[in-house]
Image (cartoon, rainbow, N blue to C red):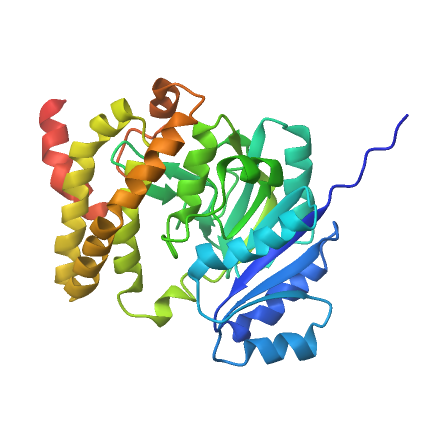
Length: 339
């Protein structure tokens, strides 16, 4: 019997001023039961991260950027190195997360078995290991992505292997051949929803996204984004419309657009309530500024689409995301009247 070749795997960690948590992250990856090349993308940190890596982790491969390219631009640098070096799979991992020792092995085993899947994602818990951060990403008919199970107590509720709409870029595995087909992360996103955008493109090209509950990691939620006031608001206002416009087939786009418009402008009102009007307006105008570019990308993505629009519509969740509390309150009377 011919011996099966051992898959070539690398793990890419983007880092920006994350020296405080980077050591624990790398220690957990170096202790994996499935050995892999570790690539840290240094995104122009100012906290001594580069010097720390060079002195304490000489075995780690480095990709050094002279400016902060965000999550999307950061991991793309590592992915390109992985592709260039002939890897079969590349995993992405947040610098403020820790992996169980079999995290990578379970993800790789799943993609080896499921040849129609291009992405495998894990059960991601908070750093206290009491609540879930994500068990895969869903996309609703409101045009709003959300992490499945976020905030729920850890239980066996999400212990089944299932197909999921999207994967969290913070702790997932990607098939290199799929990335070569659909492209890497959209660097205009910088951070937030770039992982949903890529998973959406994978779905359109006929690739599946698998959730692997045996693969477990722990995440310090918001450790990076909380360092910059208004950062999340700006990125959400900029990126949410792009996910919808680039990827939704026209018949799906038309059905989602009225709901999305209501939700989007509700977010603007909420931003104003939180004294983040400037971040919201800045994100809105940046979104409009690059919309022509996203339209060109849309034509290319839809031209390569191999699945029917009905398949995409059936993959969406029919309700508002669980964390959209204000919208739920607003639309509850309407829903009650309809019933």
